[in-house]
Amino acid sequence: MLDTLGNLKRTQYCGTLRASDADKDVVLMGWVQRRRDLGQLIFIDLRDRAGIAQIVFNQEQHPEAHAKAEDLRSEFVVAVEGRVIRRQKSNSEIATGQVEVVATRLHILNNSKTPPFQIENETTVSEETRLRYRYLDLRRPRLHGNIELRHRVVLEIRKALDELGFFEIETPILTRSTPEGARDCLVPSRIHHGQFYALPQSPQIFKQILMISNMDRYFQICRCFRDEDFRADRQLEFTQLDLEMSFPRQQDIFDAIERLMERACAVAGVETKGPFRHLDYKEALRRYGSDKPDLRFGMELHNVTEFFEPARAVLHFEGNVQAVVAPGAAAWSRKQLDELAEFAKGAGARGVYTVKVTAEGVSSQLEKNLGADALKKLVEAVGAKPGDLIVAAAAKEQIPHTDTSLHIAGQIRLHLGDKLNLIDRTKWEFAWITGFALFEWSEREKRWVSAQHPFTGIYEEDIEKLETAPWECRSKGYDLVLNGNELGSGSIRIHRQDVQARMFKALGLSDEQARQRFGFFLDALTYGTPPHGGIALGIDRVVMLLAGEKSIRDVIAFPKTTAAVDLMAESPSEVDQDQLDELGIKISDNRGKQ
Image 1 (spheres, rainbow, N blue to C red):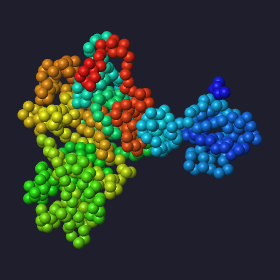
Image 2 (image 1 turned 120 degrees about the horizontal axis):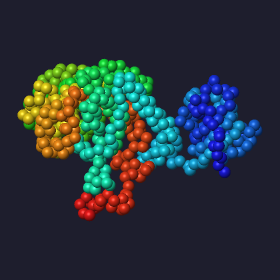
Image 3 (image 1 turned 135 degrees about the vertical axis):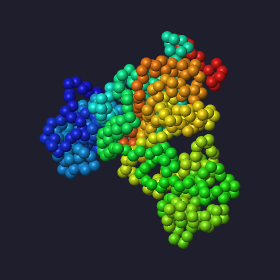
Image 4 (image 1 turned 120 degrees about the vertical axis):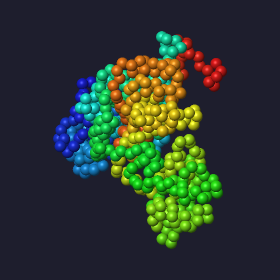
């Protein structure tokens, strides 16, 4: 027979007990972590969200409580009345290790089936099982701590932005489809048959309209939806900090974000201080092979194309050749070099060319193609020292107006940095990346598309190139990166309707298409739009990094799998035919046959 809670009131959390609580009478409530039966004495570890307390049931002193404790099993829900005493031998592994509670009464509030995995910090059970039983997974201290950290980070962001004069304003979840790159998540309307709402990919248009509305400074912790392929740091639905300012300089936005990031990081015990480093987009690519460079280690890229030029026809490569110097890797084995070559090919390299620099001289299979003198000059040019390994690569495929070799070499740099333990995991290196190209070439669509979104501002001196040389146009966009991760993107926006119209035309949108997609926004632009700009930061990614996790699924309460499935809620799912009929929807087989 289970007990009822009645008027019993918890006096404190299990994990808050300390030596100063000795001799106090307490009422604790939680889940049984483990039970140890020593006959006359039964010990349980009682767990709640604050931690664990050891409870002792003494048969001689409190026989009724001891008898009930014999029925306890893992994950039973109980309430314990008792007195706190000092332990004879402390347990330094838990915060409450100096004390224990001698139970006088036990209330078994609910029982539990045997869980499919142990509720402990580390578990070897598959992620699929953890997600299927997410309510149990979230009981694990590590996951529980991640959710608490997320709460405190978001709370600190709200406090910081309030102090900076921002209003928190909600924008619609059900809005119209305005394709911005990823596929929209569509919601059929029951009232308006044949018409659809779209879930927002971001509040981009609404936050710009709020600037037109004289809200001046807006922010929102908002849910966004993008129907795109998943990765470890992507979800069908995600959370971002969205903010916008009227009449800003770019630096005003940077200052606000740096201030709130300092405070958000401090919540996790991470000390960081603005101003953050600034890097031009082209410089970041040239030096690190990435627009989100990991600045915790050096090993910058070198363009070594001139040394390979005489052997271009023999080596069958196109474009440029980039190289990095891997310190101490000249001693790598053939197996390690083969694994490096496989990684590089997987990253898109045509091949990898290596040069070992030793005390005895330079060693490489390239000597027969480039010559000994060219190899020595190559070593001097990249600054390699005895013991170093030079790793060079060219791209397998070329993309118009893009030096693909930089991206390949950037991935090799990160791979080597990890393998050689060059990355200082204690560092938190923020950087602003600026000077992005306004357009990027879409190989799939064979045309220029917006690199960010069609409302990104343009450098005034580049406006005249919109129609003639779009690849030369620079955007007023910027990214915030941390330790090789993009935290968010923003820009100073287009606030003039004439410039916005030219931007749509450069993207190949007719006036009719632009009005069909963005009509209400284009109307709003005609009523005195102030200069404005903003940014959106990925909350999931920020918390993931601060928590030391590798996947945002471990900082989201109820995430979906990489197949876009909620295993716990068994979503998505089929719906009743009556519901489909009411919406006027018919399901096709194989996306073609009804």
